[in-house]
Each structure stands twice: as structure tokens, then as C-alpha cells.
Image (cartoon, rainbow, N blue to C red; front, side, top):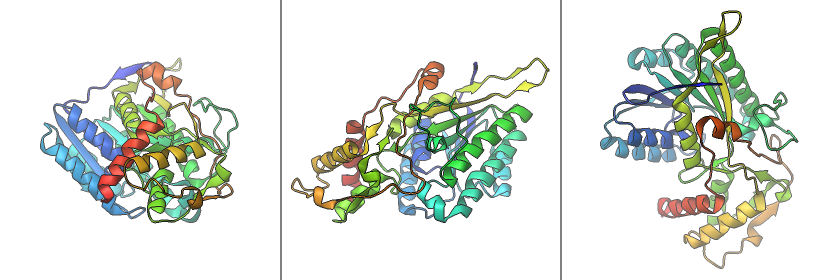
Amino acid sequence: MGKTKVELNGKSILVTGSPGFVGANLVIRLLKEMTDGTVISLDNMNDYYDPKLKEYRLEQIKEVAETSPVKHIFIKGSIADKELIDNIFNEYKPSIVVNLAAQAGVRYSIDHPDVYIESNIIGFYNILEACRYNEVEHLVYASSSSVYGGNKKVPFSVEDKVDNPVSLYAATKKSNELIAHCYSKLYNIPTTGLRFFTVYGPAGRPDMFYYSATEKLVAGKTIQIFNYGNCKRDFTYIDDIVEGVYRVMQGAPEKANGEDGLPLPPYAVYNIGGGTPENLLDYISTLQEELVRAGVLPEDYDFEGHRELVPMQPGDVPVTYADSKALEDDYGFRPTIGIREGLRKFAEWYKGYSS
């Protein structure tokens, strides 16, 4: 599909889910790159994980904003609050919307389904409705590699059938793609969904394995390695994710009419993943080496004594593996940062953050 160039400078841009992990890094990138305009951050600052980390990221955003020519506004609230979303669109009239706000986590969705429906379904619907009644040039939203479920075919392609989710989280993300397609078709709204593959890096989500494992090792606790270590993950460093989102924002699916005179949906979905799945045990070994190198853990730390191999958890999948060729073809980018470099940056950040 052809792309329509979207100019970011001078525009009002709404980023929901900032100061979440991806959102905060994206907003910082926008504040550094743009020469004019307004960036609105929206997040409910919930306690799914320690809000102090979101507050830390928000402070990072504010520091960059102090010297940026771009105006930054933070609004605390939920995308599930329709009145709030409508008010934001009425007041700031965003031209570009990046919806990263969502209840994350596969395992958490098993015991807490309500929050996933509220944020990922109702909240996303509110965003789409607001885009419908405003002249939004491009809606970019976060999907997830979880939509591939237990697909045996690798690497995962956006052309693959993804009708068999193995978690409610995955089901809500696939639902986002379906609803976005509907709105693109009916209301000619350019939408692009991005299936993220296991994002990691400094100031990341503490519920993600690399971070929670670090916390447990520092506390002298045992880390559980699922499926007895027989897992492969396409880990994607945060800077690669942000680069991908930043490029996609600037190229919206082209509007066009079909033979029937009605709009063809200006809709697209892409994978953003490294394309080099890592064995979980290798990833853990690299993490441990970098934690020692950074001085987070002592050189004589007994790693073997703090590992426990356990069965697969409900909702998990054994392999994730991205085919990001479409992203490379359309936007000239594919993730390149390897786990050694990425985990080194995380370990160095953690050393400073925790000391």
C-alpha cells in the first residue's frame, strides 16, 4: 500500500500510555526531533507495577521538555474515560495519535480480565470514535506479537492467520486490529497497527522477565525459567521500537477509492521485532554476565543455585519470531540492536537507578 507523508512539525500529537515504557521514550524522541508543535502525554498512572517508575520516566520527559521548542502537556487520566478523551480532542485537536495505552501482560489477564476489557477494548473504541469526529491524519496503535498465539509457522508474518489467541490479552489486541480496520473502512481513518515483539531496555516494565529476574537475583531469590528453558523470544530493544514507531508515524496508509467508489480502508499492520529469536537460556546467561559486569551482582554469584526450571505457564507460547520485511520495505527500517548491547545498557541503567 502507498503511503501519504505526514509532517510532524507544527502539529499537535497525542501519545497515550506515556509515561509508560514505550510511550515515554517516544515522547522524548519527539521532543528532541521536532522543531515546533505540541505533544500531549496521557496516562492513568495505575499500579499494575510500581508507579514510581512511571514518575521517574515522567521526570525524564519533563527534563527534555525544558529545553525543547516543542510544548509538552501531561494529562493524568484513562482512555476508558470517554468524556476526558472527547475533551482532549476538542481542546488540542491532535493531528497524529499514537495509542500505546493498554493493560499489558499475558499472565495478569488470566486473573484480571476486567481491566483488559476496560482499557484495551473500551479505551481503544473511545480513541477511534474521537478520531472519527476529528481530522486525524494518522492513528498509530500498539498491537502485540501475542496475537500469533501458538502458531507453528515461523517467522511470524502479518499475513498469517491469527484467529486462535491463547490469552485474553492477545484477544484484545487482535480485536484492536479488527476494530481499527472497520473504522478505516467506514470513516476513511488512516490507521497502522504495530505488533511489538518482547520490548526491553532501561527503565522498562518490571513485570518483564529480564527486569523481574534482575530484581529476584539481587534479592537472592530463585528465578523460574518456563518450559524448562525451551523458549525462544524475539527480543526488541526499546530504541529500535521507538525508531520504528517514529518512522511509521510519518507515513500513513494512502487513502483511495475502490471500483465501487467507496473508500478502500487506509489500514496497515506491521511487525516490529529483531528477526533473530534468542534461546531463553542464552538470554539469561547474557543478562547475568552483564549484571556482573555492571557491578549489580558479584562475580562469584551462584547463578545455577538461583535457577529453577519449570513447566510452561498458561497463556505463554514457546516461540516468537518476527518477519519484519514489510516494515523494512515500506519504511526502510528493521531492528538491529542485539541482546548483548541492549542488556548491557539495561544493567548499567539498573546499577544507577537502584543505588
